[in-house]
Length: 488
Image 1 (cartoon, helix red, strand yellow):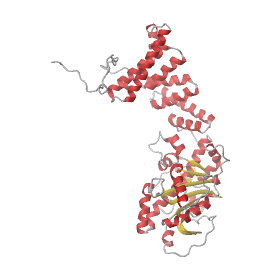
Image 2 (cartoon, one colour):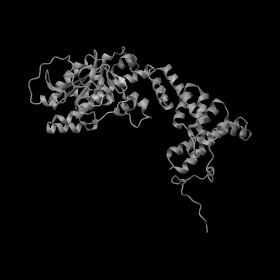
Image 3 (tube, one colour):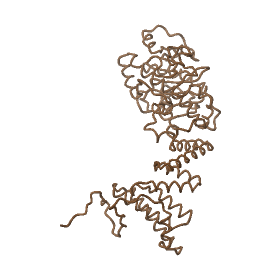
Image 4 (cartoon, one colour):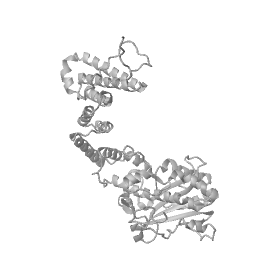
């Protein structure tokens, strides 16, 4: 646990050759830019040394500091730590009005706190920072043994932050950074940290992987996207309890897992930054990605104003959707609707219509048919083609699907509202047909041929009856358990 901690190429110390092989013994700490005097002998010094940490004296007090260094050719999963340098300027997409981004101006930031809120009672007892120096990546961890050490730790951190232009975090914008700002205020310190631009990697991670992963916690993202799996890791959720245990017993060994967890978070931020900038630079391989992955990537690139790359990726995703259709494979209806919505907004109506039709064709039972596809096609034929008869029939099909669904699901106000909107659409289309002097029956044959066919209803399943003029009680609903009774 003191050496590689499961890293491939994790340089806790030793020579660069040790770091590349993953053996990682102990390295000399990086020199601090802050003035410091040698710490006097202290009975706790030996205990902290077991964690590769030291009691650090700083003007105004002392705190515990732990420093770990990595050579630039060290790997974290699939990515070298110097990979970020190649495309780091792509980070400018997050703040287009700012100056160009440089790797040496990035401060990777993560905290371990006593609670989950951002109020005054939540204390960051461990602050982890990472940054690039000439030929290496440095992780510093600042730990307070008791509240009296907080001011000295914050003063050291303030001085350290003066050399950076950006903060890189994971959910730091809404959690870690506000806590740090509160701690400065409560210690009557007013550092100019608001000038630092924030790069919160949680937001692109959500855009890219929220729908393809069960969780976008940093540990899950690094495993699925960076190819790095943690071993013997202490969850950050246990950090407050372990800190309380340390305060009660004074044993530094209970904190080993907390330091290692925080260190891994910092290094993962550097590797994840390399991946994000590769996506922005259109350099990440797309071969293994599914149509869903490509759609989410394309939409995120559109949001980041990378229009040519986004259009190319969405085109690739659409072509893979077509390939899956030719192979007879069923695609998620939600994904087809998302692609169709994109092409509708882009003005490529023929592709949107193709996707809505495909969604109807691949639907299962009538109650599972996509109402949205029918409505979109109805709007297309009503407003785009002025084919009111076809739009009317599609609207009736949508209403029929809703009523079939009501037989299986509990009636809700939302479904009732949707039925009312479709009924209103049907009335409007009927008026338009009357105004045009056309009869629905005149076009019935052509309309039926134009509507995408869907699987037949199961035997014995009758078409839902039209509502009678008598209002139905709100508590009444069709039931699967309604069985015709024999009068005898």
